[in-house]
Length: 403
Image (cartoon, rainbow, N blue to C red):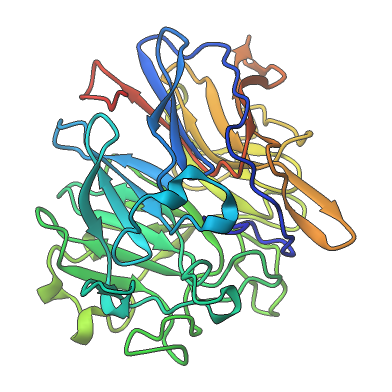
């Protein structure tokens, strides 16, 4: 389980198994998924909440393969015995941190997607390049977490590893964007990442990468959008988050187009698509396409507005009402064709030791619009531990994962 992945001061939170979950319906013909407490939950079109993946390490955005198989990936980290979670009783995935491939019905296929390296679980020959976290007694947590993912037009998988940005302020620039190439997903290219310091040839945990990146999506042209909440301005001030755009034309289609050691040199270029400010959208962690307006929605885990809309040039849509800040902290979001917004509330609480997600305080919330005005968010599911993302899947367009 990754620790808090918002750009906040870290706080220790005890994880309790078996959260109480309630549901109040889903969009017609659509499955809604979210991660929480090392499991993947689902709300069916009939309004039934179930477990797609029982406790076994899912942690981060869920992405469905574009081949119609219903398979999907999620980020994963080891579930530790100290978390008092049944997932800790299952075999640890190899290597300790990566993207796990699940069957249509939520069974672990045994396949993991990762960057090869020397750091393996005891007794395993399959190692990754993310070193153990000595502060966590070599548990491998918190030195790498895959928060966001997306499939491009070639079915290549692109994912964000936020590195050591696990609650620190200002967020360290150890984050990476990595691409794995279909169909085997063994070959890879580090598109952006640390360029100096750190560990090994990839400078893992070093400096020069992204700062606390969140979830991802693609546009109709095949470009990749990534929310980065901890970006800094030229003065080094934090809290000026942004959404980055990696153009389709700049993405390699094989590792042969990558640099020496599978690291793009120089890093694959990107442009700032949406720029936050201290006064608005200062900590963006979610970005999604809104089919109802053919525009973009961005969620900010802290600040007002909580969700705002932008046009295809990255400019604020003053004509589109925003979702105001409230007793919730939006992380990932997804939007149905009719404009209904679903978002994961990671539910931040601040105290004497700092700020962080509240155990069993997380929610999945829904916002509908009446005559163009957003209504107060309603609860889809509650009592969640650290939900970071939501995913929508419509059976009219593809094969959707089902329990």
